[in-house]
Image 1: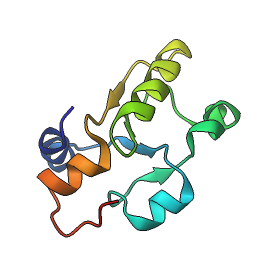
Image 2 (image 1 turned 90 degrees about the horizontal axis):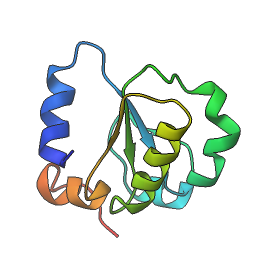
Image 3 (image 1 turned 45 degrees about the horizontal axis):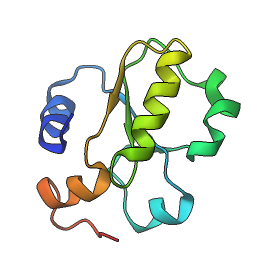
Image 4 (image 1 turned 90 degrees about the vertical axis):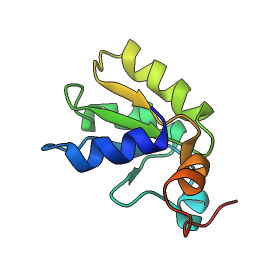
Length: 103
């Protein structure tokens, strides 16, 4: 899903998806999408039981590569509603929120 699609989806969703940011804490401090939850990529397996496999989950990283890998992992673990933010927060900053910091 591209950033503009996610923006529209969030605006129209009665039950918003989990915005799962899998970057490192230092990256999250620089910028993040409002409402997102930080769980660094390497912590996903340990915290898997705290995530709802039935809830729509949008996985987010810097450019969309780490999030794609986490998305594949979640799908293998039985998560049925996983979406990757294509282009990550970098694309979000360029396409949706020009005031967001980039790095």
